[in-house]
Amino acid sequence: MGVSTMHIVDIAQRTPEWHIWRREGISATSCAVIMGENPDKTPLELWKELVGIVEPADLSVIPQVRRGVKFEPMALQAFEDKYGKIALPFCAESTAYPFIRASFDGVLDDKSPVEIKNLSETNHLEVLQLREHSTPFKLYRWQVLHQMIVSGARRGYLWFWSPKHEPCCLIVDWDDLLVRRIIQAEELFWGLVMRGVPPEANPMRDLIPLDRLNLAVWRPLASARRAKESKIAELKAQLKVLTKEAKDLEAEIFPLLGEFRRADALGVKVTSYEVAGTVDWKGVAHELKGVIPLDVIARHQTGSSMATRFSVDASYDESQAKPEPLPRIRQKVEAISEAVEEPSQFFGTFWF
Image 1 (cartoon, rainbow, N blue to C red):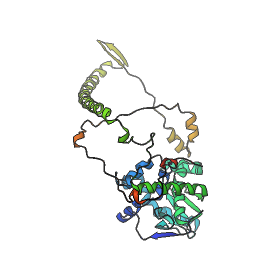
Image 2 (image 1 turned 45 degrees about the vertical axis):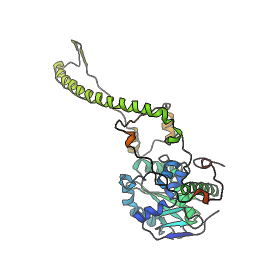
Image 3 (image 1 turned 90 degrees about the vertical axis):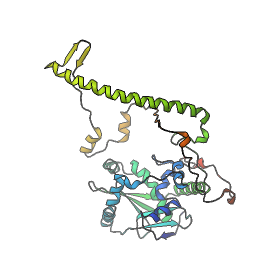
Image 4 (image 1 turned 60 degrees about the horizontal axis):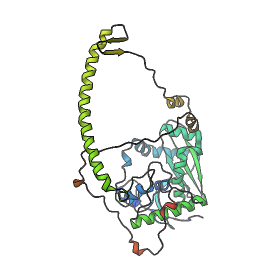
């Protein structure tokens, strides 16, 4: 199974026109999201971006992303110097599946994509030690497989480059089974985008859809909770003042101990003691030119537990709240003759 040709798109990467073009299809970075392999974004969150409900995050403000863009030409040159092959950057679409799109960091003469990754020092060292078993490789190989579907290549390369450490080139080979999964999942997902139909929400990761929340019960409880948050904020402000006043008094009391470390008089007890510093074990590993394997950390980690965090906007006024934008519908449902499939059978699941 393969795609023999691609349609090259004459568009400059990271321009406004490029962002528009990317939103009219599925980019390589979206592949891991759709396959349920991206820990930072779910298919539903990606769908909301593509149908215009939410604005995509501006990744250009992230220091690591800006750093990667800055070093990308150097990294590409380093690849060419090491392997003697020229990799040309451009944008393209699959001819068989035009909605499957890719913005290549570089493509070799045989159409093999070269994807450059300039990671944080911690992640780069993990790649050097664990290679194909590293978390970055397991995440970014989906991106390269997507690019191979566009270019028709049987092999792709992940080029992990660092200005401080040795680079690492890892190979991603064509896998018929994985490619079929990707194409079927992306085709199904794009159909949902076209029709404005959301994929199934993941109860473990997504916000519960409002139509599945009992708002009649939630509304009065939320109102009461916001009122409590206002009172908490008021009392916290008072506590902050009282705490400062108490610290000021303690600063006057402590010198009265002289050379002693403890005192207990007139209802005030003072005890001075030494606190041992914590050990930055990851820092130790870096200094020893290594990475603590995740399985070693897991063996010495206590059992996990569930925690719940509430974030309350005390100033929220439902009467002033704007309704959620409607999804952009590119294709009317009645215009589609094929049966609508259940989306959850592909997203983030192995169906073979």
